[in-house]
Amino acid sequence: MPVVDVQRVKLHIQELNPSGEETIILIHGMFSNLAVYYFNIAPMLAENFRVILYDMRGHGMSEKVKEGYDLTSMTDDLYALMEALHVEKTHLVGYSYGGLVALKMAVRYPEKIAKLAVIEGPDPNEQETLAIIDTYSKEFLIHYVNNFADTTKMQMGKRQLERNHRMYEFLFNETTIRSDMESEKDFFQHKALSQITHETLLIYGEHSNCVPSGEKLAAKIGDANLVLVPGDHNVPIQQPETIGSELLLFFNKDLDIDIYDSNLLVVN
Amino acid sequence: MDQLTEEPKKLSNDEIFDVLNQFITEVIGEEFVDEMDITPDSSFTKDLEMDSIEIVAFSEKVKLHFGENINFTGWLSNMDLDEIISLKLSDIINYIRQCQ
Image 1 (cartoon, rainbow over the protein chains, first blue to last red):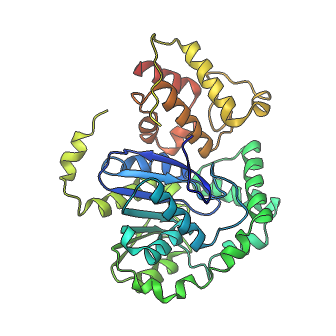
Image 2: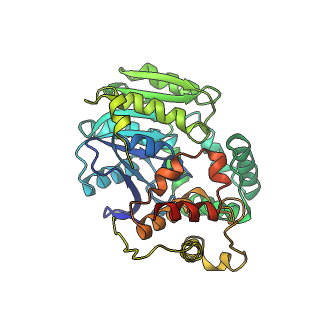
Image 3: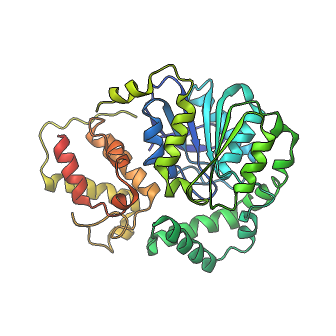
């Protein structure tokens, strides 16, 4: 298992097509892991790009740490990861809370970022996640998992439920995640967001309750394009091909290649 | 990352099964494996209850062991969610056999 020790924390990474000229880094959401991209979206992007996926601190197979779940710490991690992997400049894709990490990265290190894609980034002032943290219980998890299973066709067995329960218990009861997320409540009100000059793609599920957040971002960011696709907040799991195609279209646009020819050149 | 393991001879189905069985044990832990009967007919999500990050870890082991000429991730990426959910150990054994 590839692990990069970025001094601050040990992060689990996966890399596809390491010789790709331009790099795309994919950031998953809170309580999730890099698998959300690994099976479909990442391999699609890897046809033309070097693709790096990583598990955020405390998530997936990265180191379990007690603090640093705010956007500043999360972007410190990402910056350190780019340094460790010698990535000068990268495109970013972030899903849900990972979308906020991507936005924060563009604000803090604009020169390190090429294009920006945000999938279902929620306004932390509105999102239900904070409420979820306050009401977390095992009964809640079972309800949440069942709902997730209904909308994504993923079923969890007993051992998976236990594993998830342990992850939530760790993050909710043994880390500062609650106060760290709480401290980001006003993120969408920060002036810095409207100073983002990167070409930005905003992808939201048309039935997601995060659509108003996407509209807010579209109004704030100068060079932003909001795209609605079939699905809800779980859209990367529901429609990975659609998300992958939208991202490819966005990132390929200025690439100096003939897309049709490049697809023909992909041989195994 | 790109360690290629020499495979001097073609492995039989049983030999591949033993290797994969070992990987599954490493990924999900012996205490759980003891409780289940892993066979070529076992499905990853339903029978073995592996979740996606465990399948990532498993894929990583397959890639390191059998070499990059087995494009395991690429093979998986051509499947839709239903196919991945119903994926059996025997499907992977057959895929590895074809690639040898």
